[in-house]
Length: 202
Image 1 (cartoon, one colour):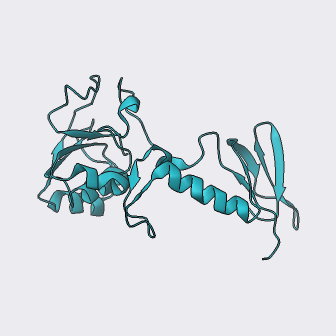
Image 2 (tube, one colour):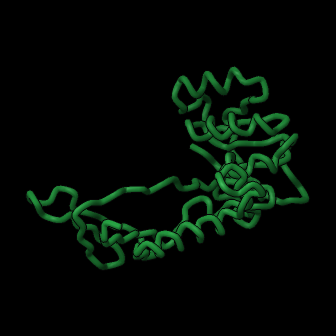
């Protein structure tokens, strides 16, 4: 061991999107899959076993241009922390639609991580909401399992990079619905035209 002191500012909602995921099927070492929160809890325990201190506080700001030889400084929860090195690993955050019922249905038809949950949508008609690279990536992943994938976007054209647009358009399972927003309440007993909606991926 190199005997370094490591501080992790994990955020109030620590663990990232895997904390909103049910069974993770594509992580090595778990042939039967593992619940997302359980995987993150195991990772946290391992980090703590090797001496990492984890604080559930949100990063506020930092000084990444200290004087020569000086420590970096970051602020969180009204406190300042100094370190010789800083690793920024902010991950991704879900962009919710703001539709009543969506968060209550996470794991029950609503998902925010296609690679994590795609096997549950086998032979289903899926909706992916968004028009950016993330939405195209999620849609492409889902085509390996779904019957059809409909990309719903509120504008008349996609914002994704051209290469991602081309990949999505060339996939026969993917269709597009433009100038459309999801605004109605999400209910399990009254689904939209496609069987399973996914949270927005810009």
